[in-house]
Length: 449
Image (cartoon, rainbow, N blue to C red):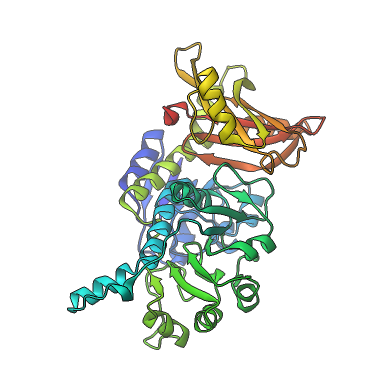
């Protein structure tokens, strides 16, 4: 397989693909037109954000099998047209979700505690304690819009701060033990700090506008580490001026160009941006929320792993081997009125080793490898078992979730939602004939040790 790199990346990515057997070429300088002239020679392309992969480009790429974007989203690609050409689209939100979660947490803590302001004052000979009295996260309600990889990473970071976490997402049943899913109306009634974790699409474009801001029942703080286009800056400034928005942490701006390298076309800054620059209640960073030393490595490895899974490992592992479906019980989940009280009972009387998730039981496979089964009580109000109305849900371990869901779909089994990936494995959901929701888990047990 021949692969073209058109953006620089961590060396691990190219080395990893070459180890799989790919032949990799680099072209970081040629124009899009020049690359279109030779793209038919390649089976794969690796990009970040140098230019759009549009219909015209795809038509030129007559032998393309995959497009890998080393980042969280695919907004620079004509996804529908690429898929119509049977081109696999690969992104890597798992690679920088932890970095985004840490950055969002760092920004709101910095804003709440006046760290930037106080630091600059001390450097200028000012020692102002009362003027820099801060706020605490504890007791506040954090509302997340979008609860995928990034939102869940941020929620996980907030677990120890004794806050109420709620989320709104267009997908049903995304809540977990860290965050309760609610309607947009309820989120706007309760939220003290709003954090955006939405991809770029029609629904998120200019989502935070005048009406959206004024629908919040009480003044709130805004964090945006998602996409700049989600926030109308003029309307945000209006909200800051009338105190409906108490402060903002912005890692992204609607003024960004696609390449993210040069923020503005000329020296004339938009009036709204000038206001943000000079407002002490606004913290700005240059689209670096997922931009860490570690995430660069993780992003690269995630792409290698996904290319391997799609084009190499499956073929090797599944050749002449009977396809396995469920391999064991991965978890027993049930509703209860007081999960913590119940966990304490099981710990005291039955010796369960409990944590925030419940209790993990370890055992070994036939090959002697460590494996686990999870026991977890959930709040009665959880929607995690939805659309099932039952008070329980079983999790089953599987070897190859992608292939199994493909077969189940062919067999007309109801699939719920989309595959979600975490460091400890992949998850998918189906319904049995009686409407019971079943969770399927392709585990990475070593991450739970």
